[in-house]
Amino acid sequence: MRVLHELSRFDNLLLSKINRDWTHPWLDKVLPVVTDLHKEPAFLITAAVGLGIWLWRERGGALRVLFGLALAIALTDAVSHRVLKPYFRRPRPPVAGFLGFLRTNPHGGWSFPSNHAANCFSGAAFLGSLYPAAALPMYGAAAVVAYSRVYCGVHYPLDVLAGAVLGLCIGLPVARLYGAARWAARPPPKKR
Image 1 (cartoon, rainbow, N blue to C red):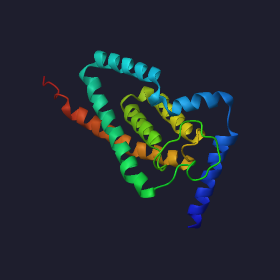
Image 2: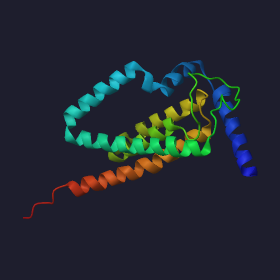
Image 3: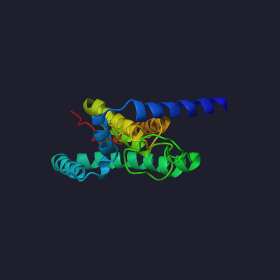
Image 4: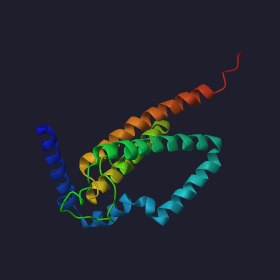
């Protein structure tokens, strides 16, 4: 029990440092946009155009990758939102009485683990496994989204860490299964 108390104390201290002390006016403008990027019309339009071009150029291959990505993220989201959050029932920092800065609209629901972090790391793990050259930028983007959740005051650091681990634990095996299925679907080599 003492370990949990110390862990909670450290989590609160790190949240305070990130949310109140390690700040910058530029980050105050950028990270709230990052944390709610899925609500930004310009991002949605850009993503839709990019996805359309990719699907048009790659045809069936892109559809299979998109299906695998959707499966990885859907599994991650379901485990996080439907299983872990109701089990742990950890209130978000503002609800728990954290006196920091809420840099985005209040978020409802439970805090542990962070679905944003889980889903982003699941997607990064899946796509990074298929496209190794893009793995570092994908993991970097996932880390920035996870950090933004703490910076904006809607999650504790352990929430995003647990979300990242969950995303990796689901995204990587789904990528392996996808790779195995893709390999198994290849036609056998022609005999000479």
